[in-house]
Amino acid sequence: MIRDTIDEMYELYCAHARSMEFGVRKLIGIFSRDDKNVLLSKLYVCSCNDIKIRKNGILPEIRKVKKKIGVTRTNCKAQIRARLTEDGMYEVAKHIVQHNHTLSRKE
Image 1 (cartoon, one colour):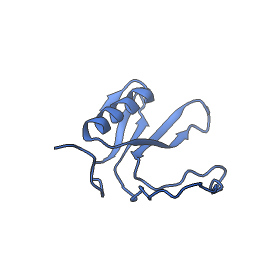
Image 2: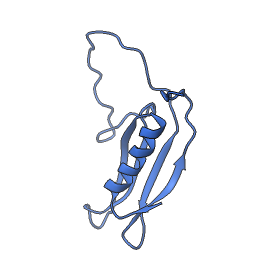
Image 3: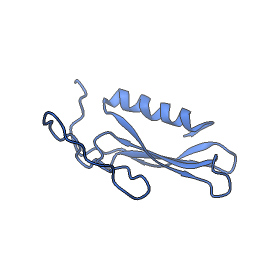
Image 4: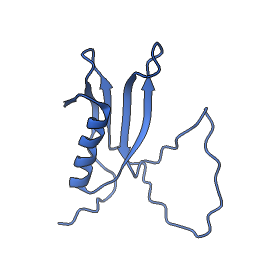
């Protein structure tokens, strides 16, 4: 799959996620060293993926929660990685389809 912009790639994965009934999270973006405005690669993951986003190498502070909620993250590996091609378009570089949890899809 090839798209003109990274936003179109995100919409493509979100449309797939809606059809399969799972959530999507934006995760890692890698920018060019020469031009910080050029996004080279972007990772979108299933919302059950439990990777924590670090800022400056430090995990965000854990805040006290008023009520306890169940853990919904299952370390799901389903993801899509988009990368910038030499033509300036974005292509799917990696796509893991299999989820390790039940989807909320209604049969």
